[in-house]
Length: 96
Ligand code: SF4
Image 1 (cartoon, rainbow, N blue to C red):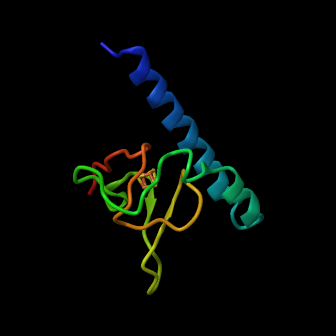
Image 2: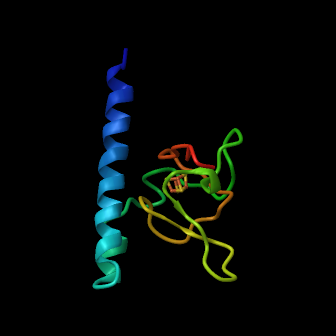
């Protein structure tokens, strides 16, 4: 049985992921729009450290750093993302 709070959280995650995927498709044409469609770090309580063993590097929405960069990006949250960070949208990536 899914309670209302859990269902609401899953819906919000789905909406953020959908928005993030849409934003990714627009990235080449409009980098500003890509960033504006994501949640702010403040709104999702992002922090640059893990939470009970969960961290961005294990998250379904994490985009790994390219080249020699130490930070990656996220499909749902604005800005550079530390692989050891965490936010309330964390969703374990079943492939990691
Ligand atoms: S934990 Fe939050 S900031 Fe980190 S990758 Fe997942 S959704 Fe993005």
